Image 1: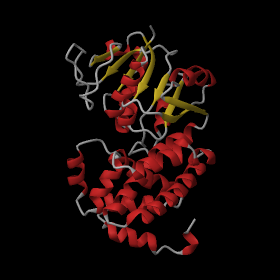
Image 2 (image 1 turned 30 degrees about the vertical axis):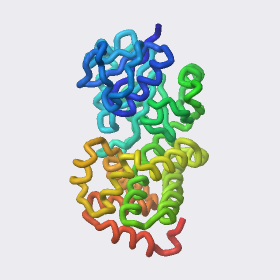
Image 3 (image 1 turned 180 degrees about the horizontal axis):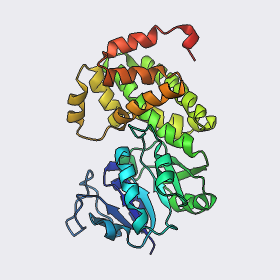
Image 4 (image 1 turned 180 degrees about the vertical axis):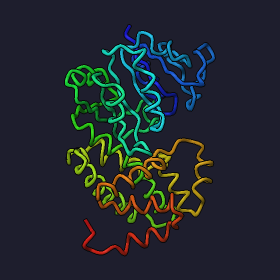
Length: 326
C-alpha cells in the first residue's frame, strides 16, 4: 500500500496522520522525539486517541521517507526551510509534497510556498489550508479546506486523495493567496484576542475581524493573490475561526497580552508554538516595504515588539483619520 509520510508531530501533524490512517491508509508520522508504535503507544497531544493500526511512528529520518508516496509537511513555519533542505538528497523527484504549515519566514518575509519552490524546484507540490482545528479533525468532525497548487497533475491526483466523508476539499490555483491568508489570519487573531482581553466585547471583535479581512485582501491582492481567495475558506473562513475560538493559540496569546501580561510570560504559559507572534514581525516589515497600509498589523507589531500598551494601540486605531478608513 502506498505510504503517506507526515513530517511534524505537533497537534496538526498528529491529527492529519491519525485521520489519514483511519481510512486504512499506510501512514508514517515523523517527529524528532517519537518512539516506534507499540501495543501501549500514546499519541503526543492526544493521549486518549487510539493509534490506528496502519499508523507507524518514527524519529528516524530515512525510515520515515523510505518508500513514501507523498510527503505532508506539518512543522512550525520557522522549521520549514531547514526541513526542506534535507529532502532533495533522499526524495525521488516524483514524490508530491503537501504543505500544511502556515506563516512567514521572519528574517526574509518569504511565504512558505516561496521557500518550497526555491528549495525543491520542479517537484509537484500544493498547499492545504482553511478553517480547521486539530481537535476537530482528530475527533472526526466535518471540515472544508482548500488545496492550492500550480501543478494541474498534482491537483487532479491529490484533491480526490484528500477528500472523504469528513474532509471536503476545494481545489485552487491561487497558491500565493492561500499562503498569505494562512499567515496573516494568525496575526489578526492576536489582535482579536487583545481586544477581548481588554474587555471590549463582541462588537469590537466583529469590527476587528471585518477590518482585518480588508487588510488581508489589500496585501494579498497587491502580492499576486486573487480577491476571491480572501473571502473564501482560506481567507475569511480561517480568520473567523482563529479569531473567535479560544481553541486558537494565537487568540489565547492575544488574550494574555490584553490582560496586561508581558509577551514572554504569555509565551511561557502557553508552552506551544504561536505562529502569529513570529509572523507579525515579518508581516509588518513586508507591509512597510511594499507600502501597504495595514494599521491593525502595525499596532499588533508595536505591542509585541516595541512595548506599546494594548490600550494605546486600540486608541491609535480608533483615532485614525477617515481618509485611511479603507
